[in-house]
Amino acid sequence: MRNVLVTHVKHYAGPGVVAALLRQGDCVLCHDASFRDAAARDSFRQSHPGVECLQGLDPQALVTELNVRALSVDAVVSNDVYPITPQPIGEIDPAILRNTFEAVFMFPVQLAQLLLPGMKARGAGSFVFITSARPLRPEQGFAVPTSIRAGTTTFALAMAREVASAGIQVNVVAPNYLYSEMYYPRARFIDDPDGREQIASIVPMGRLGTPEEIGDLVAFFASGRSSFVTGQVIYFTGGWP
Image 1 (tube, rainbow, N blue to C red):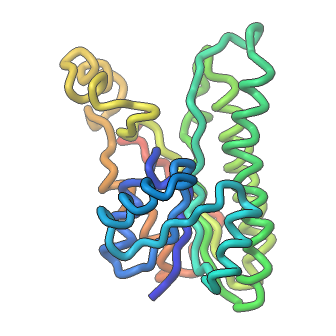
Image 2 (cartoon, rainbow, N blue to C red; image 1 turned 90 degrees about the vertical axis):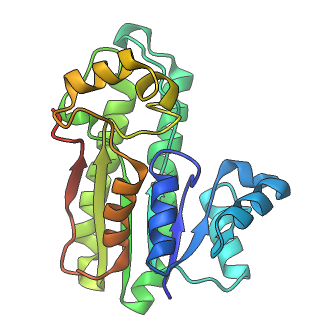
Image 3 (cartoon, rainbow, N blue to C red; image 1 turned 120 degrees about the horizontal axis):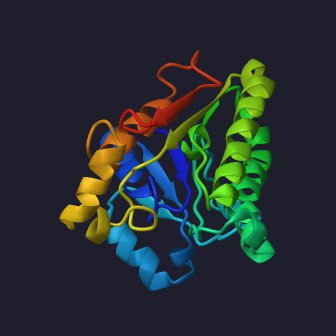
């Protein structure tokens, strides 16, 4: 059984990834901001048998907790999130810029720095960075998330080259138009006919991607079943742009 750490399990690709990893028999080590609350951890464990809920919120606290509990990590799914606030470049709020950078760039970078030594010592491991396909077609008002997500993708590609000789895989799954309540909520883009029509006019497949679809894709990369595949960016976009 492999231990797979997934960040922000309740958001973005998290729900689909956790379900897919459990189906393939992994032990899923779960991080989420809500897990500071014991009741939230208990509720998640009850609804997802086979997971381990971690209390740590930042990378250092997470790794300290893993060490205390003697939990090694075979694979990491860096599924990092921050709410998007559209802003023209001339009106970018420095606080939003800094917070987005901390959440979707610094968090996965620091986590990788802390977990790499253990993987190098074992000569094996997998990282999957969930970033974004937005850099394929930058849109007005979205310079902050687009540019920072692009930075995380580029970091992952650089990391892949650096750690390949240690037997560690690093790949990127870059979604756009994936159903999630943070970015493409059901009420607006699935239940509302106007929202469905808007998505159908943009996405060649005519719909949002599902949690199950991205979960199966990420679970494959986290499995280590094709360890020669590294340094790849897979765009999960239904044919967009």
